Image 1 (cartoon, rainbow, N blue to C red):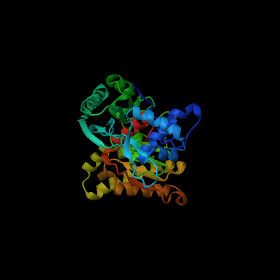
Image 2: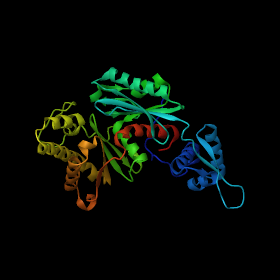
Image 3: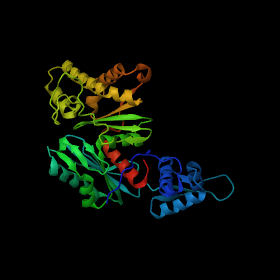
Image 4: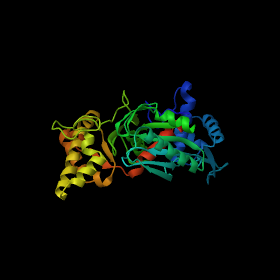
Amino acid sequence: MTTGFATGRALRPTTKVLPEHARGHNRSLVLQTLYRIGTLSRADIARETGLTRVTVSDLISELMGEGLVIEMGQREDARPGKPATLLDLDRSAFQIVGVDLSEYATFRGALLDLDGHLLDTVSLPLAGSTGDEAAAKVEQIIAELVSRAVRPILGIGVGSPGVVDLNGVVLSAPNLGWTGRDLQGELAARFDLPVVVINDANAATLAEHSFGGATGDMMLVKIGHGVGAGLLLGGTPLFGSRFAAGEIGHVMVGTDGGATCVCGKVGCLETWLATPRLDAALAAATSDIQKEQILWEAGERLGIALAPVVGALDLAEIVLSGPTELLDGTLARAAIETLRARTMPEFHGNLELRMTGLGEDIVLRGAAVMVLSGQLGVS
């Protein structure tokens, strides 16, 4: 069983639609309203959504029958008449399996609740695994988490490095040795559960949208085993015509050469910024001054890569996700200074570049958003 991740539309429905599309959309609208606002009466939901009370009552009956919505008791109300019955999403009804394949040393997985909170975790050392061996470790993590679940599993979400199409096929992940691997199909067949596989940076962007501090158009740069980015414009994820939007890791930055990348080119952004490359360069440094120079140059290269994107899309903020000890400080300062120097100050002088507040769990929590959006239409 597979499920398609919501594409080409805003993540959060806010208005009713035409009759031929209405029921599924309005169902998601009711769930989204309860998910974001919390405890409401049927009349409250009707006012918030613009739906009729009859439609809301019908949808609530359906959702209660599926165990997704529960009654929370009566509202304490001084007004005359029968007190309203309050409703909420049953946030303990299901659990979600999330898997993060973005780090170069470890694969991580977690059981999460519907609010994106981690309930249990599993990790396995990658130990240089590629191809079938790496895929087997993904299955091992998921099998362990499925065995630990104490509620029905809503679905499985996986954030993978590389280029991933909308069917969950990993078209190219050089660091894992995957080309054209139908990871989503393999996992769905193995576990007989809804599965969504997307790029890890896109998963992190969804987490920042749903659980982080994102307030408008943004780009999130995910730095780990490689370097990738996710884009959210007008509340809609941007994947690109060949599913490679945000693949900035293999963009060459500068014309002064550099190290050879795993992709075969020389001077890709990953050669300056990927965690194993930075760790190795810093370990070889002989002084604190040299370490600062390494971090500053990495930040400059990031700023060089991002400046045309910021200029073209008029982004309000850039969010960094990765090892705080590497990114937060010298590297971030160099990136924002380079960005501002290379774009128009009257438009981008207030551009914010910040670290995510979601830490190392950002892709796992993004995996939960993938499943929530695909299965319930909420985020």
